[in-house]
Image 1 (tube, rainbow, N blue to C red):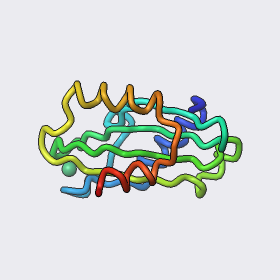
Image 2 (image 1 turned 60 degrees about the vertical axis):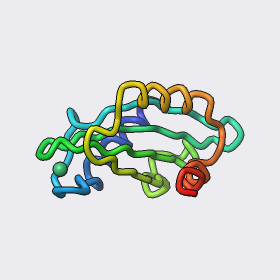
Image 3 (image 1 turned 120 degrees about the vertical axis):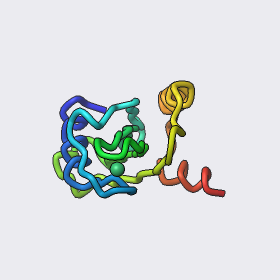
Length: 118
Ligand SMILES: [Zn+2]
C-alpha cells in the first residue's frame, strides 16, 4: 500500500473508529500497521491494522480495503472491516502469522472474513 494511502487510511480510522468496548477514540500512537498488500490484477490495496484502546487497553484488528488504489484519495471507496479481539488475544506470533499471510494474500478481503466466520 503506498505510503500516502496508508496515511489517509490511518486518518480515516481515527475519525471513524471507536473502541468497541468503551467507545474511546484512537489517536495516531494507538494505531499500528501490521502489513499491507496490493492485488496487481484489481489494483486493490489492503492494510491490516491494530488499534489499542488508550482507555481500556483492548485491541481491535482492522482490515482495510481500498478498492482501487489509483483513486484512493476518495476515501469513500475505502471499506473498513474490523474484528475486535477482547483481552490479550493478539499475541506476537499471531501478528507475525497475519503479517506473513497478508504478504501472500491476493484475494478479496471480504472473502477472507467470510471464510473465518464459517
Ligand atoms: Zn476501550
